Image (cartoon, rainbow over all chains, first blue to last red; front, side, top):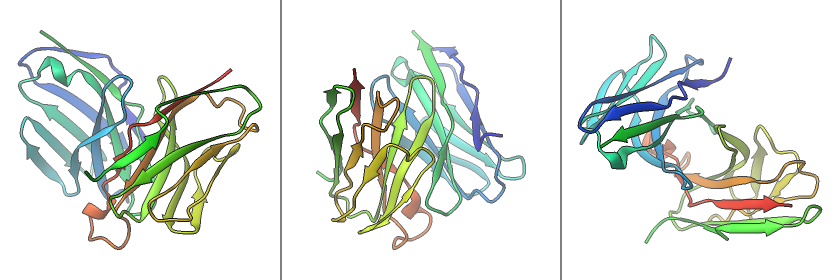
Length: 110
Length: 118
């Protein structure tokens, strides 16, 4: 079983819609959770981190964490064409290593 | 500007040659990491280092070597023993254990080096 799993997509949404990206993780002791955005040919950029159950909002982005279900999601409201990218989910167990999913490709259609 | 720099951006080598990828950070971060990314795959950890003069193997260390002689520098050598070295190489850092939880575990990436071996 992989440490972190994401649907690879591609996910397509129209401009202005809500994009919903999902991630599950296998180790219950995971304590910190991250979402990265990666444009084609570029390195990952940290866009959200979440550590407690519930929602965390930052602008158009909302991260949701449910530790009981081992599930973390990212909602992007009012999606823009510039949001088109691959989104990587990552977890850390308060240790040295980070575990990454393979990413979900998002396309926002104008 | 604080950040992580990697050089060169693109690197071409012949098979059988060793090559060293540079990674420098001026964020005063303790921990540094090297990942490899192949098309359609997630990030795979090669090596990481929490402090100067100490480093640990990641999941795919075979054919790679690193050094950590200075806090700000963590070069990666891709040796001729690496069977399939063509990939996108990413260096990352986190503030490290000396920082407060949880912000000390936010990981930031450099721009990457794309290595092609023919």
